[in-house]
Amino acid sequence: MKKKKVIIGLSGGIDSAASASLLKSEGYEVIGVTFNFLSSEQTITAARKVAENLQIEHHVLEAQNQFRKNVILPFIDAYKNGETPNPCMLCNQTMKFPLLCDFAKINDQAAIATGHYAEVKKKDNSYELWASPNARKDQSYFLYHLNQEVLKKLIFPLNAFESKNQVRGMIKKLLPELSKGAESQGICFIPKKGHQLFLKQAIFGSQPAEAGIFVDSSGKILGRHKGIQNFTLGQTRGLGLLSNTKWAVVGLEPQTNTVVLDDEQVLFKDRIFVDQLFVHPHVDLTKQEFSFKTCRWGHIYRGQIERLPGNQAIVHSRQSVRAPAPGQALVFYQGRRVLGGGIIKHFEFR
Image 1 (tube, rainbow, N blue to C red):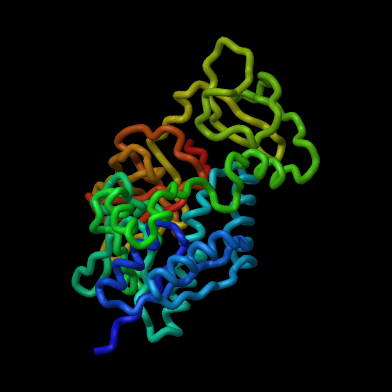
Image 2: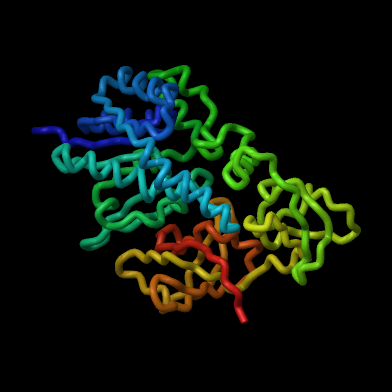
């Protein structure tokens, strides 16, 4: 009997290596694909070593120009608009999964797999995305947008693992050096501890960042700062402002290099405007209460939705949400089942 092919995104890290190993042990013909988004020889070498050890076919797909167009430039533009974008989610949506699916189509309509911690369940004639039972590692928040075409092909081999230590233990015999490696964190195209410098260059170019101003919500000038790239929505510490008032960052205006400050209570919202709304099949959010998150590690809230024309909505939360950041995703759940999500946007409620 011919083995079923599966195309796996192979980054050279622990999770994708363990996923590929599991799939091979289950009888799949595994083909590893490494996306060269940043001309990183280190990533390609690591992935190639994994493929050699597993004795699986391996390909490198060049996609630097696409990555810059679809991920890096939108990330910069979002910051210029005072938003807090999520490039990893954008990468999944516009790069990784479309490229995996395209490669699978030319390889006998193969299945696809990644090292994410999440679950796909089939119900009747449709496929549902579920959060991983391993809540500490769950990554469903970054995957809410996956449609039926992707979900019907998708395998998450690591879903059965209860902890990262189990994954390390499994891969230790095959690749001892890899099992000791640290988990990747941060944004792949920004050097470690270089977030502020990257944003400064993106917003102001190679010239020194101009000093900006702090203002309160009425527009009154409260002081000066060294550049808007040093601040995030909701920030209360490290403002460098001599004042007895406890200020919080409630707004960012990159066009004028202005940081808006106010009392922290201003950050709490019970209505959140969402754009680019995506809802999975057989889900009617208007007829049910649901839980939702505004960041991966964030508090779980309960609420209801008010649909607006187009793919827009207002989410009404039972409990006020602290600093829902424009540019971040708001993801809907029913228990572990992912119902859909959207992108938080600026909106002035009257």
